[in-house]
Length: 467
Image (cartoon, rainbow, N blue to C red):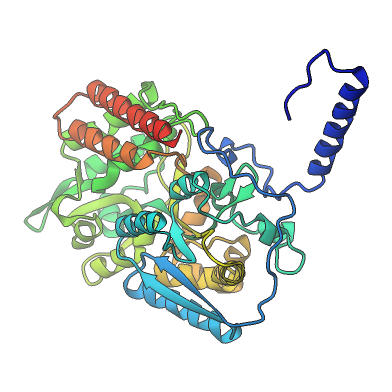
């Protein structure tokens, strides 16, 4: 409402003021659920991508009178896809009016490209896996469904305690200014894998700090059986997880609200120097041609490495018959900081009201206590509910397979990367520059300066395109 000029009668001014107060009061009576009262600023929406305006009491369909089919695009393959299909089949047995058609789109990169093309051609599926930064862009383009009306509905929604049962770091990652546009599905974190035989042979405790990690890497770099074992391994993607190292050093990465790059700092220099020095000293290496570090680790070529908890099944497969191994929480520097990544599930506006309801029902089933525990056991991802973590089924499984319980030990130190436009270009630029520093092609200072400049330009370009 535009302001009234001072020349208008006083009575009219007071009338408008009174109506404004009434409107604000009415709005305040229907606040959306906000989950935990965490002080984390990561629950804020970036200023360039505000949450789409929604009517306060949006009408939704809450019952299905006729059969409905929904399509779910995903990037799962192998046993992961088989497990997802099992959950979908179980859902359909219990919901005979809903048919769930799973459509694998290949890799995550393939999935993103196909979703982008489908948005342009107006052929989006009912729902899909999506990273939160994808959802940020979809919110701006009014492509995704605000789930609050479903969450709040007394018939099909969740009580506040049910919403709070979603692990906080995952819940916050799907919250944009109090509105939920997704729910967490396949979530993972980074952990330290280590060769138990090598540590025992060298009488080394599992490292808990950067200094202990460096010292262990030195002692675990040695000749054995005619080959050289390297103490520490890093994935080729170490550059794209640089936020973890900067945060552990006590620094900041990128401000989600303003889009300001902040990693070109003393903490950033400390982190990159730590990584580069270990590689220059020959006590650490990248995965290289192996693609992922699970294979060199499984062969016994490296004694330790930091990788995704979702890679546990791959480590087990590579290590079988070769080495004995285990895992631990990440070593820390000034603070403990652990990235939690993976995708959520979102629903698209192009779906019919009936399809939206069916998708919501499937989401609830997909991440209920039993199924998120099943998914974690079968895939190496983490349960996304506290109730699943406390279930006897999960506790027994972790007791028998301790490495699967490491991720949950890091929730208190958990964070997620900024959900900003242009983050893909940021990660590409960052990965390139960090690699240049690790390979000795650039100094630490120059690599960080170039990375920060490229990252800021990518964010600013994305902001400009969004205007």
